[in-house]
Image 1: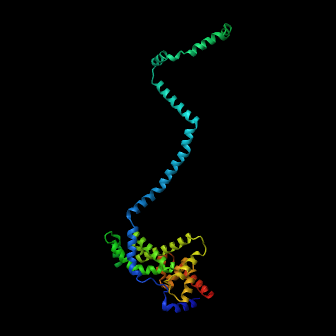
Image 2: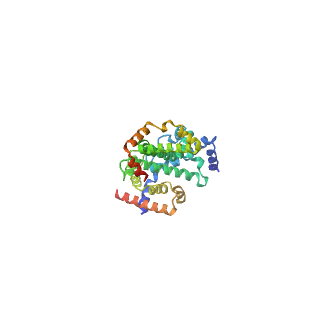
Image 3: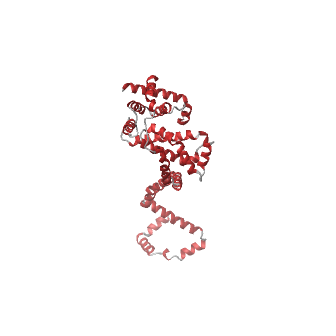
Length: 144
Length: 179
């Protein structure tokens, strides 16, 4: 097995290394390398990159949540009239309940007595309608 | 002791530059020839050697002294050379034998290859080996490196290295018989 390799090695022994380099390559290599390091290796840049790398997954996740919120939540709540009116009604109801809770009985009675809108033209129209359409017999039947 | 002092100076900001120049002067030739046998062409070797030393410059603070400076440098150089080849492979539209074709073209067109016909044949046969076998063959056959040292650099057991070398020799022998 190794015989042929050994023969080849003997033939190659005069010049084991068939590769060469340009003249004074190793003399100038260090200088070329240092100038490349001076141009490329800026420590501030490295710090910025590593800081960004650490924050990157969290930033991506936050951006994804924000995107989902803007795409789904906001359009639904601004365009659906049912949801919008419901939320408005709830707000009004809550304000009324809170106001009523903090009033005493006298304040409530005064509020009804002083309310000009309590007896309106609509009430007069309704009274006239009832007088015209309900007979005495109807009233007797109702009382019985 | 000399290496220890060099490492200490490399880790201090005020002495780093001068110590690094000393390190490059000491190891540039050994690393160059190690890389050259992997990537074949001189220009590619120059790129990989520069990348190797830049990696050393950027990571010298994290160097753990128990692994040995020589072993650490060779390990970085080997990884850089193999990464370079895999990048070349990835960028190509072709897969399969691309790496072999690229390396054989580099060998044939390289103006800094001055080998004879038989040396060219041998190099072509070596190029056709899988990466790991090629590495082991070059380090054992040309550099005459001990299996124990090779084991530290390649992070592979001595037994596995011996097996790799054995397979490599067999394949080269077959290749040479065919031509």
